[in-house]
Length: 346
Ligand code: 1CP
Image (cartoon, rainbow, N blue to C red; front, side):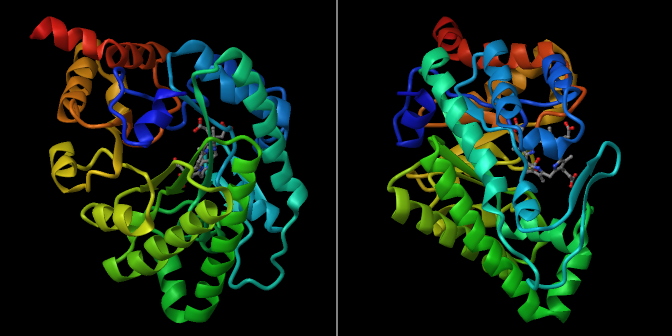
């Protein structure tokens, strides 16, 4: 069994498991080459062969313990009939919505993600039998942010304004997204995903009350729906920017593992996170632009904090497009040599 799944079940494994958010993507030359073979990012995401190749690319280079299916959180709104385009500089551009009228589900679109998972799982069983395949989706709040705002934003103030002036419409959007996200994730598990991750990248823009309503409550429903349909499956939740609300989020949603961003102090996480929840994180993604000794020092600090507790190493947020590949290589080496080093140090 993969050590990342063992860890998520509460076992302290000899090696610390590691994977990296956005581990497939523009910092890899082989990804840029593959991406250039398809005209748009959405066409790329809906091409199961290309997706499968992009998913496996980082496993070929680095000793990572999991692959995450190459897709995007905005494939779901696209499947609901919303026009979504990705532009290099401005980021994603979506047709804006003000309610749920006209939303419909095109299951053929999400079916492409499932086909990609099936192909990838088969390949991994042959080539990387000890590594796990992860499926994912955006959480309802974060996906609603893009659907209502139509593009990225620093703090999605317009979306909060929209909620306060159109409460029922916004609640309807969240409720449709909760149902569709649960279904999308259940289908991913049925297609071969062994771990699920739920990305709530904009969770940190909400007041504690709205955080309970739009982050905790929908995520809890999604986790329950998945577990009642497919049984016990490890689920990672990431409520980026949640700060002290992270602990309530982890407990109330019943996720197995909580991803921690780089703003949190790991000793505080260690003290406050209940023992049955596995922490994951939280190296600053920008640190990969520093020298090898800095990377090593900061990585060791995180590893030492959790040296006697199940823990998954990751960055605090996705790897940045210009990140030197050698830094990622070095990072993974430091993590994988950790036990050996600590023995030498003793
Ligand atoms: O052509 C390109 O390379 C486009 C860049 C790109 C990539 C590589 C986008 C557009 N999405 C992705 C892939 C992606 N997105 C993955 C799979 C790759 C991997 O992890 O190995 C995943 C898991 C995501 C998830 C995602 N998309 C999130 C949640 C995680 C996070 O980073 O916070 C979010 C918020 C998005 C929206 C999105 N899609 C793309 C961009 C540039 C963005 C961010 C927009 C913004 O800044 O608000």
